[in-house]
Structure formats: structure tokens, C-alpha cells
Image 1 (cartoon, rainbow, N blue to C red):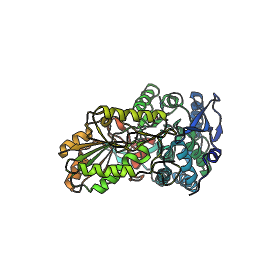
Image 2 (cartoon, rainbow, N blue to C red; image 1 turned 120 degrees about the vertical axis):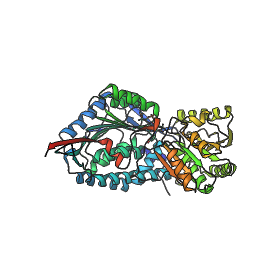
Image 3 (tube, helix red, strand yellow; image 1 turned 90 degrees about the vertical axis):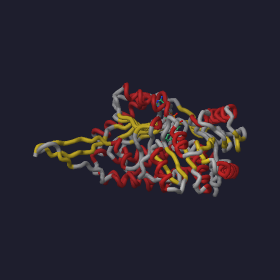
Length: 489
Ligand code: NAD
């Protein structure tokens, strides 16, 4: 496939300003920040840098659109139609949107296309809910009749990370908008460009001015301004557990806005003695190396039954060595760069800690080249639960393989983390599958598979992986208030 050169691609980047009240505008400070290409380290665009003042203007626009504008008052079916149009517009631009995303965050284009498609599915899914959000008729005490009404929460503030800028943005805007809310969104400073483009497409699709505002900027300024704002009714945050704690504090100490948190993970795979090892090795490879391990549900800890441990390692190493590493804009490439220098350094320091603590490196372990931020697909065997790489979220292409003897031991090891986002079980025996899926403390458990669930399946964390759920019917509820209307019969 033929692509424009990087220089030509840079020239095609149109939207670099804040998007407030249906207009692209400069920031109050006039400051800009650089958006980078992680595969070269070079600047691809200078983007307007929003701060507290810009967040405040965006909140005013969102508040006006909520109190006075048509959006919350439209018939649900009309909002659904507009979301369906947005999905169509994104689909028509899928190649350009995915290319821009890859240029800005280094996700291999084949993975980005998959994720942009998944984002479009999420919009269509929530568009389909538009005319089906209804309360219930209830029976109260004595002669009391009651019913519940679902109402939008109001102005929603959303803070999004860089790893899947389009998909994670859409997981927030689709359910929030379909319920009739208005929004102020801060994309990550590492990857702000696609969110601005989607806001423009939303306007074209018929989302009125002021309903969806995008303020690129840094976390401690623009992000904190959203978390602390007294006129934002709800905060939805996806990012690290540490920053999740900060924004929850800010939400609590300002106006007690409701909070949904989608945070980090250290997801376990449990590979039992009767597992189909080909299937287990395939999904384990995908789960840790997709987007270079920069995935909240990366399968970063694999617990393998002692009887199949060596055979699994042999397969896992062979697959890691075959991985096609290179320019993420090339469609055949499977493994691109990490997002930035700081992240690459952090991953390399985890690799050093694994050596120092006695893990056995079986493949990878090194930085590749001196341009961009590439790290080899890396696997450590003979990892034990006390090692740093088995406990902390690395957010990079580093797999820890641990051995177990009994299912009870596997459960204990899998659950011995402060995270609880996702898990996978590979086994044929149904009693084993049932026992493990009920014993593991995580928001989603995949059996003999990984990643593919679809927009109708709720996703979110137990323990320090988060609060609330995205996707599915559960993903609508955080954007609705329940009002009970009660009357005597
Ligand atoms: P991060 O927490 O550093 O940043 C996330 C967002 O928060 C960014 O937009 C950032 O600018 C903003 N931010 C930073 N400091 C802030 C502050 N003080 N106040 C308000 N906002 C602030 O995370 P990241 O590095 O962008 O993303 C990686 C993390 O996200 C990983 O931990 C990963 O597991 C997690 N993640 C979770 C999910 C999920 O669905 N559970 C999905 C993707 C990523």
C-alpha cells in the first residue's frame, strides 16, 4: 500500500486548536505544545495548549448547551440518528483517522485500524440505545404508585489517555451524548490530534455547537481544572491509578461530582495443564505485545501449569522472535515504538530490575536503534510473585512467566495484586473454567480467548483498577440520574 511521506502527512493535519462552542479557537495563553511522532521523536504539530481559563470557557459553552440548547431535549431517536451519522463520517475517513492516530502515538496501523473500527462499533451500539432508555413503573408502600425517570447528569468532564485516543474518547462521548449530556473533554497531551478531528465530524453529523468541547492541554493544568470545576456534574477518567486518585480527590474537594475511573491493570493469564497450548500462546502473545504492551488490560503475568511450562515458553519465545518490528505506518508492521523517551526509560528500568532480582530473560530485553523509542518484545521466565515486574504495571512489551502446581495456588497468585481489570483462563475442563472464573477478582474474565468482546460487554475494574463500568448497558448508567416520581393512587 502507498502512503504519503511523513512530511506530507504533517501538512495534512488540519485541527490543532481548541474546539469550544463549535469553533476552533486559540488558547487564552496563546501557548502551544508539540505533538510528537514516537517512531522518530520529531514534532508533527504544534497544538494550542488549554489551561484553566479555556476549561472554564468550554464549561460555560457546555452548560449553556445543556440548559438552553436542543440536545438534552431532542427525542432520543434523533440523538441516535446523529450518532449513527458520526459513525458513518468516521467510517468514510477511517484510513486517514487511523493514519493520524498512528503518526501521533506509534500504534501499528493494522492495530489502529482495528481500534478505529471498534470505536465506530461503540458509537453505533450506543446510537441504538437512544430510543430505548426508559425508567420503570414501581409499586410503593400501600396505595403508592411510582415510576422512575432517567435524566442526563448535565455537564460531563472527560479525561482521556494516549494509548487508544479515538477508542477511549468514543467510549465516553457515545454513552454520555446519547443520554443528552454535554461535555468538556481533555485528550492526552501525548496524542491530542484525533479527538479534535472527531469533534469536527460530530459537528458535521449534527451535534450542536457547545455540546462537545475539546480542550487539549496538560494534566496538572487543564486536566485538574476539569476535575476541580464547580460546574461540571460528572467526571469520567481513564488513565493511571495514581492520577485516578488525584482526580478523585479533586472531585471530592470541589463539588463532589460523580466519578467513573478506568485505571491500570496487571492482568493474569492462567494456562492449565489441559489447555490448548497453541491457542494459549497465541492469545498471550497478542495480550502482551499488542500496541507494544501499552494496553490497560495487557496480559502481563502468565501463570503456567508446571507440566506445560517449558512447552509454553518455547512457543511464546518463537512467536515473540517472529514479530515484525518497524515503522508503524507500514501495514505489515506489528510492533512499533513506545510513546516517548520517559516511557521507554521506565520500561528499561523494569527490565534491569528483573535481571537484578533473578528472573531469566528468554527473549528481547534491549532497546532497538537510536531513533524513536523502540524496545524488543521481551519475555522473562522463572519470575516469582515478589519480583517488581510481577507486581507493577510496566505498560510496555515485557511478559512475566510464572509457574504453578495447583489451581488454588494459581488463584492466590493471580489475585495477589492491587489491580483487578481483566484475566484469562486457558483450560478445557468445565469445572476448572467455572472455578477459576468465579475465583478471580477482575472486572472481565476471558476463557480460551482475549480482547474481543464487543461494545455490549461491560468493562471496568475491581480493586484499584477503577470504579464503574464502560460499554454495555452498565456503561450508560453513569451518565444518567434516576428520578423517582411518587404519587398516591
Ligand atoms: P495518565 O494517568 O498519566 O494520564 C491520563 C490523563 O490524565 C491524561 O490526559 C493526562 O493529561 C491527565 N492527567 C495527568 N495528570 C493529571 C492531573 N493531575 N489532573 C487531571 N488530569 C491529569 O495515564 P496515561 O499515561 O495517559 O495512560 C496510561 C494509563 O492509563 C495506564 O495506567 C493504563 O493502564 C491506563 N488505562 C486504563 C484503561 C482502562 O480502561 N482501565 C484504558 C487505557 C489506559
